[in-house]
Amino acid sequence: MTSKEDDLAKAIGDKMLDADQASQHLGIEIEEVRLGYARLSMKVSEPHVNGHRVAHGGFIFTLSDSAFALACNSYNQNALAQHCTITFTAPGQLGDTLVAEAIERHNAGRSGIYDVRVTNQNVELIAEFRGNSRTIKGQHFPD
Image (cartoon, rainbow, N blue to C red; front, side):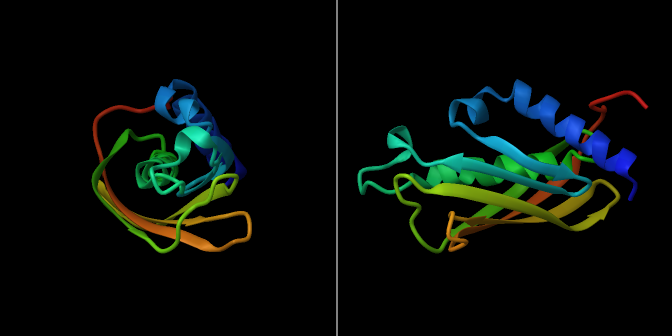
């Protein structure tokens, strides 16, 4: 892959996050985007905790899904989630900074498979997410 491809992937990620009001509302930030890869972060604050006073699983899923979305859209082909699963391994705590790292495992035809690891600031595993993507018509930027 070339730096031009990675630059385009980063531009796509920036464009997508700029239009993603849900991720912005949660305070999700881009740390890195390149072809087939994305790393996002989110600080767990009061609005992110559930009745057990730990990070709500829905917000961890959203962070994971956003990283998955940037990774699978990095080829400048519109892609949507077809199927996703998540396994929570430890609770995220109030004040934690969660990092979701999405890595492409397979991409062929219109289908892709991406794994997302969510860790805290101590690199302790919080969740494992797997997303299957499906490309649709359209591009983020014209060729």
